[in-house]
Structure formats: C-alpha cells, structure tokens
Length: 144
Image (cartoon, rainbow, N blue to C red; front, side, top):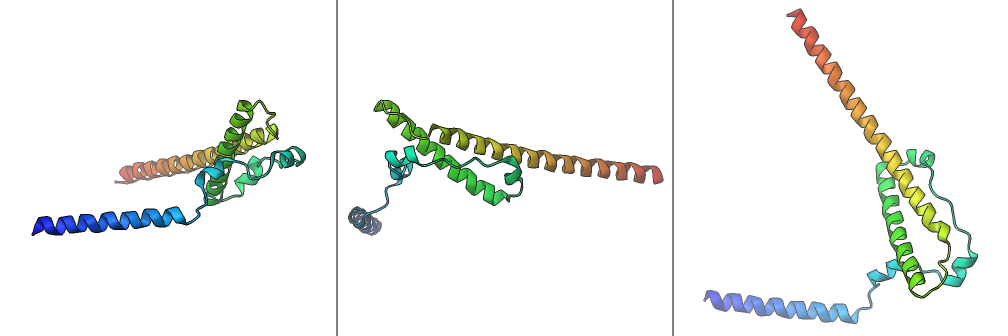
C-alpha cells in the first residue's frame, strides 16, 4: 500500500515538473545573462558623456537601505563593465567609456568609507556606554 502511494506521488511530481518545464520553455523570459551586457549600443556609448561618481558627502545623507540598493546597482554595473571590457579585449576593440569603470569604483569606495564611519561611530557610542556603566558600578560599590 505504501509503495503504491509513493509511486503515485512520484509520477504526479514528475508530471508537474515536466509541465512546469514545458510551460517555462514556451513563455519568453527575460534572460538573466542580458544583465551582463550593456543595453546601449557601442556607437551611442562613444558619443554619450558619462555621469559623475557619488561623493562621500552625498552618501552620508543616505539611509542604510538606500546605500544597500545603490551598492547592488553599482555591483551589477561593475560586473557588466567587466564583461564588456573582456569582450572588447577578445575582439580587439576599443573599450567605450573607460572612465565609467573608475567612477563606479570611486562610488563603491565612497560607500565603504561611509559605512566604515558609521561602524566606528557605533562602536564609539557602545564603548562610551560601557565606560559609563562601569563608572556607575564603581560609584555604587563605593557607596556601599
């Protein structure tokens, strides 16, 4: 009895997996590997000016969540630029907008600076609180 139920469950699972596979194969999906390629054509990239990097001063005003989102965007941009750089090298083509790579790196470095500052500040506040607690305990012992 148990083997009959388990075999029936296995058939049902296999059938649903096959159906899912066929369903996903027929539906046109956005390919995740497309995120590693620049959506703008090479000719356009040679003509368009590149924006600027984020400064530490600007990032100090951002929340942790905003900086996390920005880090993710910059990380994807960095991976895309590395892919484009590698493809340009393989095809012996000039890499368009090489300053873009530097600006992404500077922005990511600025985020690290701001997060480091916040971490050191948090540690200092924690240590200050510990010192005050210890001083209060010493005063209580003297009073006793």
